[in-house]
Structures are given as structure tokens and as C-alpha cells.
Amino acid sequence: MRSPIPDYLLEVVEACGSDNPGATAGYIPELAHADPDRIAVCVSTVDGIVYSAGDADSPFSIQSISKPFVYALALTELGLDAVLDRVGVEPSGEAFNELSLDRESGRPLNPMINAGALTTHALVGPATATPDERFERIRSGLSAFAGRELGVDEAVYESEWGTAYRNSAIANMLRSYAVFDGDPADVVRGYTRQCSITVTARDLALMAATLANGGVQPSTGRRVASRQVVRQVLSVMMSCGMYDAAGDWMSTVGFPAKSGVSGGVLGTLPGQFGIATFSPRLDAHGSSVRGVRMCTRLSADMGMHIMDAPEPARSAIRRDRVLRGPRGNTVRVCSLQGTLQFSGAEHVLRALSDSDGPYTAPAGDRPRGRIDSVILDLRRVHSVDDVAERMLREAVRRLRLDGLRVTVVDPEHVLYPHHRAGDGASDAVVPSLAPLDGYRRL
Ligand code: GLU
Image 1 (spheres, rainbow, N blue to C red):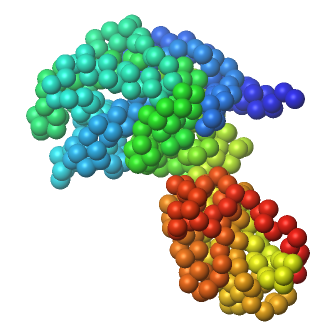
Image 2: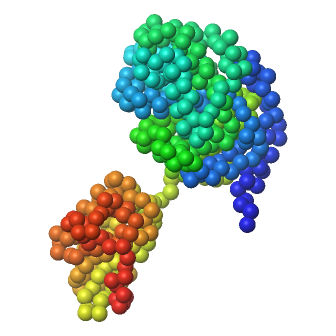
Image 3: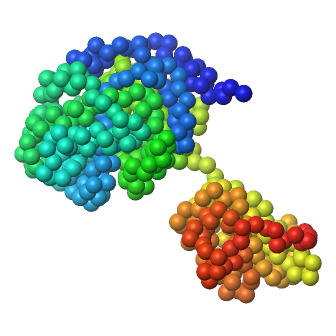
């Protein structure tokens, strides 16, 4: 079978590309002359399959889409607190190139506006790094997110550097408030080079998928950022990523995203996939007109709004039954499934401690007196987060205190990742339900 997904994406390109309003970024001459007819959409899964339609391999400069990734690099190198000392996380509601600082703290409001991005650029690398060394760290850091070596569009760099009056004003303001040390001209030069790094929509989709995948690049398998860093980056993208239209974007499209003035838009559905669109003509906020359209359409068609959350709790228990063994003993087998988080684990705890107690058959089965043991069957569980892990282990402990024999069927080690046979606490962890052969349903 040929997958219908590329056909669907082609339909999105055709429907959203039928007209081409807006204007290319006028303040950077090389971008003003970009071919406005190019259009692309790419979706990358967290295991690195990229579906695309249109000009997915057409190169363009990354511009502001570099900002979340350089923020990630600064967070990785300095830690959250040190970065928060220099750059805030509040939406500014102002244009991306506003000369503004937080009134009270004197910091740039967030790392997605130019004032914050110039600062995070300056924070990358050791204090002794030369501008070239700092840039190289950034180029190779972004390349690790993309999964291939990225280069620089020298024509775009020269063109923007030649007209970088406003960013120079912002950098001088930042320097005068001692937000960063060093020469403001070096910072603007380095930041401009950072914005001139060349990518394709395919690269951006993989960079977005790396964020969706909790920091592990899907095609290389390399961890390029920690989960905590990714969470911080996505949170700031959610509230500040779409320039001064972030609130509108949140309510209509509803996934963390970042746009750039060369026409790219990058979006991330945490745990699911990365998205990238490209079309050079921009709206009044500086985001690609057709890119926003495509993202809006994808979100509506594919249920991508992150507030449309799944219902993991209701589906946590796959089956819950009581079996009688050959010697008359009874065992309650509670089979779980999917991804377990707080709400799913709560569902399980509730079932195991329902009004009749875990000693009787669950609802649906007629109570037949006290049961002797409980089997927690995790064969269909994909993952258990830290909270659910603690809750389920506590359930096991309490059931044992109540005098029940508890066995956990955990062949993939989702609940006891470090289980070794005979290590005491978890020696009732077994790989299969085979010991139940010969048991019958009550
Ligand atoms: N290099 C551009 C600037 O600093 C990036 C702006 C953007 O993409 O929003 O003005």
C-alpha cells in the first residue's frame, strides 16, 4: 500500500497555496528577493520518518527559528537558573525587534525576541570563546538537532549584516545594561551568522521532531538536549514563539511553534511529531502567510491542538479478572496498557482499592470470597512515567502489606527498569503469564 499521508500533505499544499498574499521580508535585501512561489510542508515522526510535499529540499536561511535551539544550547551549558538571570520567559506582546527590556529586572523579556536571542547567543560557549568559536558551537549544535552538518548562506549573512542597524541598537542597549559582556558588534555579527544558517523544510521537521522526541534526534539516535531543557524550550515557544500573535496562535493552532522572517514555521507536537512549513511571503507579524495557513489546516484536520488531550486514564486498564487455580486458589489479574501517567495510575489504584477491596473479584465478576494473590500484567504497557512508577510500586508494597502475594509481569522492565533476578524488592517480577496455565475464569 502507498501511504496516504504524502497525498494528504500535497492536498494541503495545493489548498493553502492557491493564492500567495503578503510580502517577503523587506528589511533584509537578500530575503526581499527570495523566490516567493516556493512552498513546502514536512512532518517528521519521532522515529525519523519524514513525509513531505512541495519544495521540501529547497534551502533557505533559518532566521528566528534558530532562537529556540540556541536557547536550548545556552540552557544545556549554563543551566536554567543562570540563563533565567539574563533572559526572562514572559511574552512581550511587542514586535520581535523591539528595543525593550523588562522594567524591573532589566532583562530581555524572552529568548524569542531579538533582545533575548542576542543575549542567549552571547551566553553560548566559555567567556573566553572568540566570536568564531562561539558561532561554530552554535552551528554544530543546530546541526546535531538536524542530524546533518548545516552550512551558512553567505549572501544572506552579508546582506543582513550590512543593514543590521536595529539589531546593533538592541545589542548596544543590552551591553549598556550589562546584560552580556563583550563587544556588541561581535554579538550582532555572530547572531546574524546564526540567522544565516541554511536549512530545508525537511531539516526543520527533524529539528522539531527532536524536540517532540524529548531531545533525542530521531535519525542519529543521539541525545542532543535533556528532557528538562526541551520542556523549557517548548514552554517558551508556546507562549512567545509566534511573535506578537502568540495568543491567537495558541487558541487556533495550539502547538508550540517558531516562525522566521525567511518564511519557515517549525512546530512540535510533544511525544508525537515535528512539523515544518515554508513559504517566503509574510503577514504583518512577520510569519509566513501560507505557512500559518498550512499549520492551521494541519492542526484542524489532524487534531493537533495540545489542549485536545487524549484520555489515557480511561484506557489504562485493559482487563481485570479473577481466575481460580487447580488447587482452588484465586488470583486477580489486572492487565494494564499504553502509556501510564498520574491519571492512568490513579485509575489502577482506584480499581485495586475499590470498596470491596482487592480481595474480591472486580465489578462484573461475582465476588467469591477472598483472593490469594494479585498479578499486575504490564505486557502491553509502553512506558511508565516517574509519578506512575512511584504510584504503582507503592500499590504493590501496600497489597503485600495486606497479606497478598503480588506478581508483576514486566518483560520489558517498564516498572522495574533495573530489575535483576533475585534482587529482593522485585523478585516477584516475571516475564510472562505462563504460570497461570491451568487457571480458569471464575
Ligand atoms: N535575522 C532576523 C532579525 O534579527 C531574524 C528575525 C526573524 O526571523 O524573526 O531581524
